[in-house]
Length: 329
Image 1 (tube, helix red, strand yellow):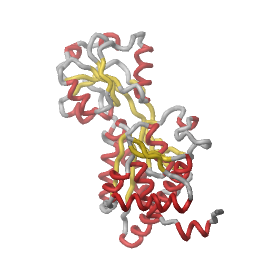
Image 2 (cartoon, rainbow, N blue to C red; image 1 turned 180 degrees about the horizontal axis):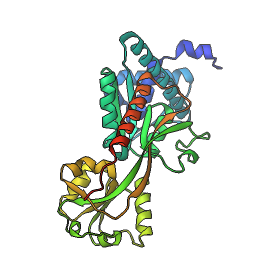
Image 3 (cartoon, helix red, strand yellow; image 1 turned 135 degrees about the horizontal axis):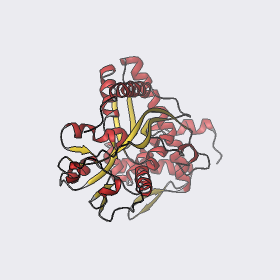
Image 4 (tube, rainbow, N blue to C red; image 1 turned 30 degrees about the vertical axis):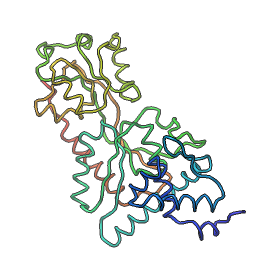
């Protein structure tokens, strides 16, 4: 059977594509049914309808759940594109009928989630209270493919030096992404306020080597920066380390007044002001990189995403205005 655009348009339903994409995202038909508030037989029926119509299997069922067949992978890729466009249409209709409304999904890393996104969210809610904002925390190799597929609208994170040269999706053609720089971030070496090394007037990086450390996980870009800092100081990576990207876990560990962490400066600002942490004065700032907002160049942004981007710019300008603070004592 040879398909035509018209024959597929007559038979295929957006609803079926949404169900199929949810099955693969959930990893099982049962979990997809729960997420969609449907019965398991209803979801199974939709999958059977799709497989029957195309005359090809879409799923491989195994002990650990379901995965896509090669043909199913093609279907999933196109389905995500259709679903993203449908979400854009939904937001535009809602914005037209109800005023400022819609849904924006943002991926982020800890460097942007500590203050930039919370402040931008406050601004967004002041301008458009009906907009639903969903945040997903992850690593770049997870967030960038989701951005390219339309699963998320924006990624707010550090801008890697080689981001434009890397294939984030594993496809033959790399995703078309663009980035808007927002502000420049620094790193700091920090510990609890009663750490014994705070008593010293001048601290060198090497002076801290004998203490327990919390370092970023090895799969993160922040860890590469951390390894480079130790190398520049002529130090090996400490033997006594914990690998973590959890801000709350790191802060709790540092309350033993011995553990030291390397973290984005803005991520610990509020905790330092609250008297939980204190930054070591190494005599100079440690450069981390620029924080920016990534978006797809191949897909038109939703009205809600455009509004959030403007709120991110405003929050960044506020930060630039307020960042002329004296260095920590």
